[in-house]
Length: 129
Ligand SMILES: [Mg+2]
Image (cartoon, rainbow, N blue to C red):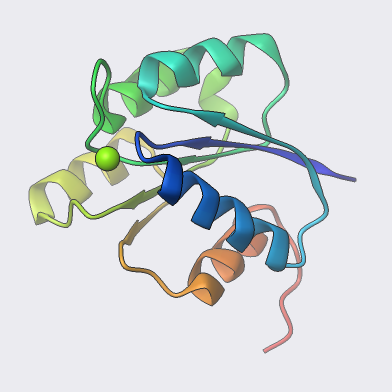
């Protein structure tokens, strides 16, 4: 089974870094879709099946917190796991994202292995220690 993954970040460079990390993680990747902010992210989620969302917090138009809230209040979209990957590390923001239903919160700069392991865990892969 291949997983469709949505990357939401306003930095094209960061989207590329995350895409590369996903490709190296050992996950069977289907489509990797990119969006530049939460609003664009919602449009993508409405158009195709997404298995996992990786989102930034600080973005124009719709930030990551509002994006997570919109997803988690939708009957269908709320089941999609969300991992936050952001330079925003303030405790209040981290707690808000997690309490809204984000599965995990990774602060940049990150270790590629960290994201890979996290994705595998959330998608239900067995990870050899
Ligand atoms: Mg940003």
